Image 1 (cartoon, rainbow, N blue to C red):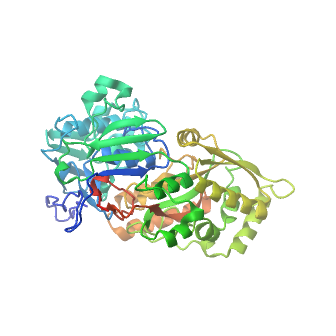
Image 2: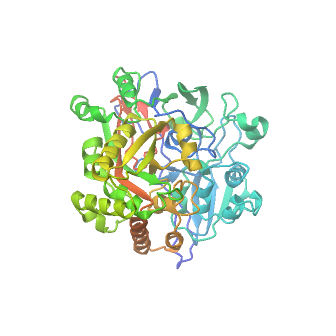
Image 3: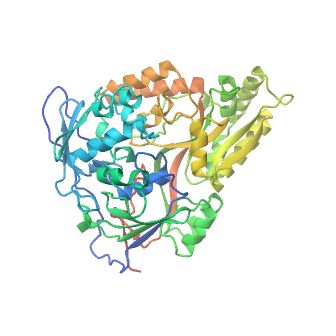
Length: 536
């Protein structure tokens, strides 16, 4: 990250490591056909960088577009369109753009493109589900623009010249640059949007600035990309084509992988993991993943507006069984929202995390009876999850635990991805499955989710004390002081229990041995431009 010690008040140019593209080791023979086929879990809700919020969309957009910076193979910040940057106070950042960065139609990528994109991302007319992201980054006037109190032109982003961009924050954020590899900060081509309007993301219309361009899109079947010859680092890109297949069934995806049709899966079916680890150890890839799987309670809907109900349901989940037996791919039981693998974060020792499961079940029974429920008056509700065999297995196991220990009767409701997102965003649920993957490797990327103003706070949890803690964390330049605030925030969540953390993710997938350059990025930010196909 490019930070200057404020006491020195020096202007230090950020000369980061090399921008990554495929690094083919000496001696490796490349296949004649450089085509990668990736399972992507589901059909993306959109390919507009400013209208997405999920992992399936981010995977495709990472290949189509490039922001100011990228996420390196180990999750580090590496240059993207910006080849260097500087700040003297963590408040005003100046980015120097590559002079050879171009759009897929050959136009130059300029600072004005980023100004246009940032303004569009916060413009209420865009209705971006991630407009909050620029607010959390504290870009000057972002909140006022998002809320319609100021026009987008007042946002603290301006072009100093064709290749120099200045971003001004309202508060100094020491990790700001690490927030800029995510889709909401990607540039979009103004002329294309003005010409095509809402159809700008269609094949034939889309102009992008990443290593690949959109060549084919058959809804619910495949999205195909071809190399962008105008990409600034095309010379070091190896893969010519990338295809994304939206396969929701983990078993179907595994079978297509085993038949050789897929090079990478999105997931691994839980019941086959142990067998595959024995039979195909060369294909199993398991890595750390900065994210947490949880159930979220609709805190504005009775009886989930009662913390006793939320705590009872959370306590009665046996996380050791879910993580170790149901999942069994290396996941860890979760008692906090931020996983312990987040850089610079040490979770607090929460009381309930130290109890035995028998103690938790006893506390859960007591709490739900205090709230007026029990076997004579069972609590009934719906549990929402998006279509996935793995999500269903977790839901069935937890519903059984609730039934056994609390007498709770749960109806499982599954919806396809886009409908599930809409249902959750509209608050039309009782309890919903959710997962949050850090947008950048810092605990605030997880804990911000529970702030009252956060756009993805679907359970509508609101605690002014929690909001104040997270606001104070923005101003803490000392890592330990920031961690102390994060620990206090987690303790507050343990009292209010607006969500039930269940397990800390790992990322497990099948990758064909012929695929080279596969990284162990802890955010699972995998760029196809970094990979290649070896000759067999």
